Structure formats: structure tokens, C-alpha cells
Image (cartoon, rainbow, N blue to C red; front, side, top):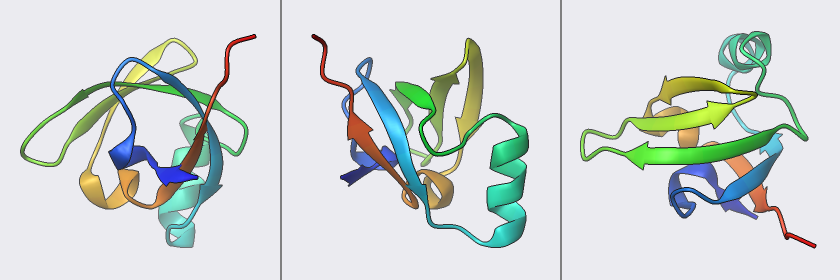
Length: 77
């Protein structure tokens, strides 16, 4: 597994674990980011922000958050 920050842009991954404080992880769950959720990184900025696509919605997440979300690449069959 790798962190969301380290993924390749435009590839699909699945969220495996969220290693953040309870208040942040609850907020992410409210936004639809749970274990097993498909996620695609769209852009990564030098400032540390990353734009991701989750369930058809684009979200901007900071580096602290993306570095603490572990993902696994989805293998196309």
C-alpha cells in the first residue's frame, strides 16, 4: 500500500486505511471517503494540495490528509 500523496495521477485506487485524527476521519467519512472507496488523483500542486475525484465529486485535500490515507491500485481485469 502507498499513501494517496504518492499515487500516479489519473489512475484509480481504493482507500484501504485512513490514519488521521478522529475528527478529520469523521469529516472525510461524511464527504464519502471510507475504506473501500474508489478514488482518482486528478492533480497535485506544489503547495501540497491535491485534487481528487470521489464518487463523481472533486475535492481538494491538503498534503497532511493525503499523506495519511493509504490506498491500493485497482487492477483492471
